Length: 190
Image 1 (cartoon, rainbow, N blue to C red):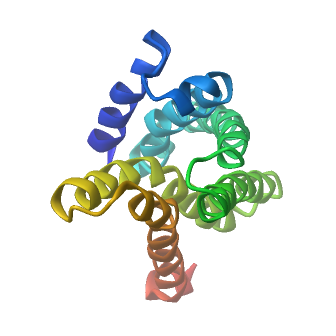
Image 2 (image 1 turned 180 degrees about the vertical axis):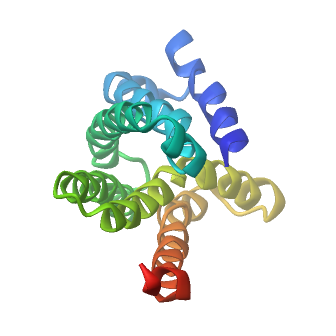
C-alpha cells in the first residue's frame, strides 16, 4: 500500500514541474493541482495512520498526522470535485468522479466527527472507508493502462469505466473489512 502510494505521488509531482501536454488538464491546471496536492499528502500520510505500533508509541504524532491527512483530503476532494464537473467523456465521468470526491470528503468528515465524540471504533471504520477512496488514485493508474494497453479498449469506454471502477470496488472491500471486524470474536469482546 505504501509503495504504490509513493509511486503515484512521484508520478503526480510531475504536474507541479510542468504544464501537462494534455490540453484538457492544462486548461484546468489550478484545480488539478489542488486535487493532486491533496491526494499526494493523503497518500503519503494515510498508510502510517493504520500502524497500531505508531498509535501506541506516539499517539500525539498520530493525531497531528491525522489532522494533516484530513486537511489534505479536504483540499484534494474540493479540487477533485472541480475536476469532476469538467472531466472528459461527459456525464458518466462527471458522476463517477464527482461522487468519489463527495464521498472522499464525507467519509473524512464522519471520521473526524467520530473521533471528536470519542468513538474510536467508528472513527477507525470511517477511516478505512476513507483511505479506500484515497487509494482510488492507485487503482485508477493500474486499471486504465490495463484497459488501454492490454485489453485494447478505446479511451472513451476505458475512462468512463475507470471513473467508477477505481473506487467502487475499493469501497466495497473496505465495507467488507469494517463488517468483518465488527463481527469478529475479538471485536465483540471489547
